[in-house]
Length: 243
Image (cartoon, rainbow, N blue to C red; front, side):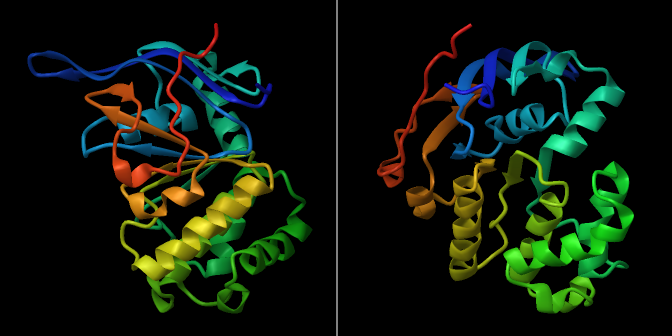
C-alpha cells in the first residue's frame, strides 16, 4: 500500500428521479494502486462512468470517502476541487473532445494556460514534446479534422498529460477505433503506468486484458470480481479497502 494509492470507502451515489432517488452506486470500496493500469468493466448503465467521475473529481458522492495521495477529495470546496482536478487528473474522452478551431498543438497547450503550472514561454515546447511522446509531433500544426481517429485520440492523451498529472482516467477511449489502433492506444496507456502514473480506464475491450494489472467489474452499481473468462490473465481484485 502506498500513500499515492486511490482509496474508495463505502461510496454511494444517488441521483434524483421522478419516483424518488436512483441508486447509481452502492457501498463501493476498493483500492487502486499507484502506478497501475486498472480497468473498470460492466454493461452500459452499470455505474462505471459514474464511479470514474467520482474519482476524477467531476462529480461528488452522496456518501462515502475518496482519498487520493492522502487527501479526501470529496471534502473539497468547488474551487478547491477544480484546482485539484486541473493539476492531478488528466481526462481522455471517447470522442476526443478536441477543439476544432485550434491546432493540435494549441489543444495541448490549452490546459497549461488554465493551470499555469508551466511558464508561458515553455508551454509550446512542452506540448510539442508530449506530441512526440504519443507519436504525432508531425501533426502539431494541423487541425483535428485533418487527423485520423487514432491520431486524434493520441492528441487527446497528450492534452491529458499537459500538466503532468499523477492520475489519468479514460472513458471508453478506444470505442471508436479499429482494433489495431486500439492496441496501440492501450500500449501507450501501459507505458504511462510503467512511468509511475495511475491509469484508470472504463472499457469493454476485453481483448486487451493483458495490459491491466487490476480489473474491477461493476454490475447494478456494485463492485464484483470479474467472472468473464476473457479477462483471464488480468489480475482481478475486489476487496474492502482498510479504513
